[in-house]
Length: 135
Image (cartoon, rainbow, N blue to C red):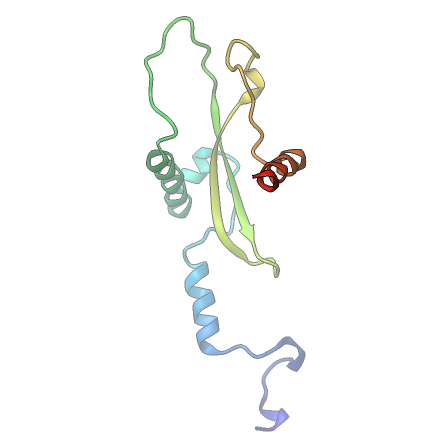
C-alpha cells in the first residue's frame, strides 16, 4: 500500500468502517443536548429513557418510599439535573439524569438530624488502616 492511497491526514490515524459504524450506532442512542428543564427532557425519548433508568435504580436499591403527608411535615422539593458525560476526546459517551433534593429550604433539627458526606475523608481512611494493622 502506498501513501498516495491513504485518504485524509496520516497523523489523525486510520478509521475503519466498523469503528465508524460503532460510533454512529452508539451516538444514535444518545442525546447531544442537555435539557435545562424537565419539560424539555420529557420531549426527548432518549432523556425519558435515562429518567426511567434513574427511577428504576431507586426502586431496585429500595432507597425511598411514599408516606402520607401530615400538617407537621415540611415538604422538600426536588429537581432533575441532566448532564452529558464525555470521554477524553470530548465525545459524549452517555446521558446522565439525577433527581436531587432542593436542600436549601431545610432546617437542621426539623428536616434532618445528621448529614453524611458522599466521599471518604482521609482521616477516616487512616483510622481504618490503623485498626486493620492492630488486629
